[in-house]
Image (cartoon, rainbow, N blue to C red; front, side):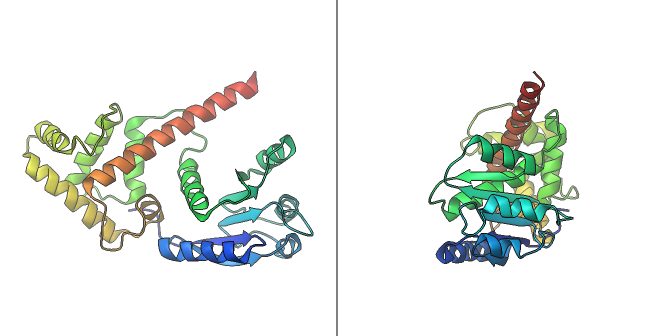
Length: 263
C-alpha cells in the first residue's frame, strides 16, 4: 500500500498576507498540505518556541525584527523533531546564507517575487529528493519496485507485473512514451504471452483499483488530487519515468558532491 495519507502541517513565516492566503488556497486545492500556522515577522516566528508541530516550514528571510534565518536557527535548539522540509525564501544568496542553510539542512529558493507555483514545484522536488537520501547507487529494479510501492500499486493485480517490466525497459530508452504506447502494449504482451488488448486493460485496472484503495500522499504529490479521475496508463508511465530519472540524477549529483568535498 502507499504511504498513509495525512495532510502535511505547514508553518508559513511571511509578511505578505496575500501570499499567505494564495498559499492556503493552493493547499486546499491539492489536498496534500494544510496551513496550520503563520508568523508575520521574525519575532512572531521565535514565539512559536519550537518547530515540533510542523512537517514543513516556509520562511521568508527578509522578515522584520528578526530575519527568518536567525529565527529558524534560534528555534532549532528547542526543536526535538525537526520538520521534514524547511524552505527559506531569500531575495539574494551569498556564501553566508548558503553555508548557514547547508549547516542547518535548509533548502532555499531565490527571488524577490516567488510565486505559489514555484513553491509547489519545490515541495514536489524535495519530496522526491527525500526518497534518495543516503543512497550511493541507483539500482533500476529496486527503484522501480520502490516507486510502485510508494504510489500504492498492489501486486495482487496482473497489471502490476506489466508496470514493473515496462518501467525497467523504458528506463533504458529515451523514446516518448505517449507516442509508443501501442508498441509498449504489444511488447509487454509478447513478453508475457498475452494479447496487447488484455495488457492495456490489466494496466488500466491496476491503476484504478489500486489507487481507489490507497490514499497515499506520494501518489497525490505526483499525479495531483485525482478523486475519481485516475491517471491514464500513459500519464502514469510518463510521471514514473520522469521521477525515476530525477532520482537517478540526484543520486549521481550527490555522489559527485561527496567526492568533491573529499578532495
